[in-house]
Length: 293
Image (cartoon, rainbow, N blue to C red; front, side, top):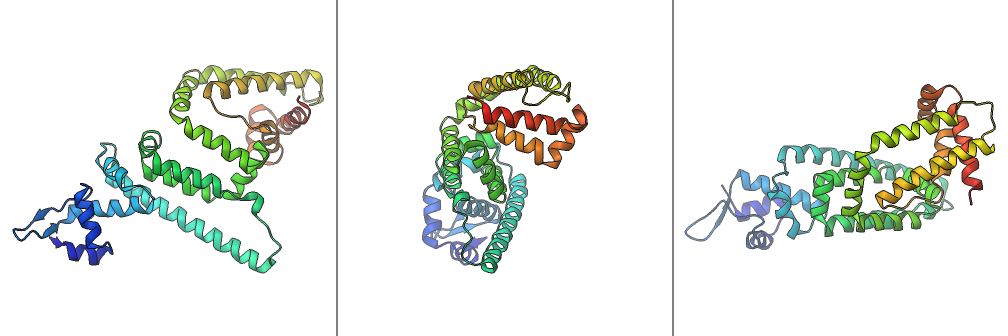
């Protein structure tokens, strides 16, 4: 058993704060002596470890007990997720160090303002703090949400580029994400509807794609080819409408870029539909995006 003073010295948490944890039922002492001294055993220390980690994730105290008392809260799994999260944070810090070193070498003329994702990430942090119940329901745990969060931060420039390509700006992309978070329960319900019909939807989309690339001698800009792309556009828009989320105004431009420049996309599509089909798809989508009304 450890006294409250020993726990305070070990963790750096003040005795006053440990008293407060006891008061709100977050961390009760394992025993209390006749002299009214609080004592803590190894199980209490494990609980305190979880509190410290959730605190590191900016989880409000009022939400911690609910998280730890949840039947879905697996301590061992939480430790695994914590390890992955710390590794992601480490990689993120290394990338930031490399970015700073590059900026120092290049001088002060470099600007990353147009790629600033701070508002986007701040909105996700706020959501985590204010809606811990939804985080646990839809992500499985706060740790899993944070792992996804750190994964996105490690690809900040890549996401920023994608956001600009699909929505035109980081601001529009962030506004769309905020709207999605505000209506997350409805969106998740709608997602189940889409999942129930996913096989039919994928089959239709594959059929249209096969029709689109059935004759590569045609011009990607031809009326016939563009009519097929329009059908694809209508189908995808319908899925977005059912889901209740915003489709970026430059969605097909972004998709065209993937088909034309990303090796993994080119390899997959050329293997599935035949050599040269990825380039044909990209050019058809690019023309549609640039000329749609």
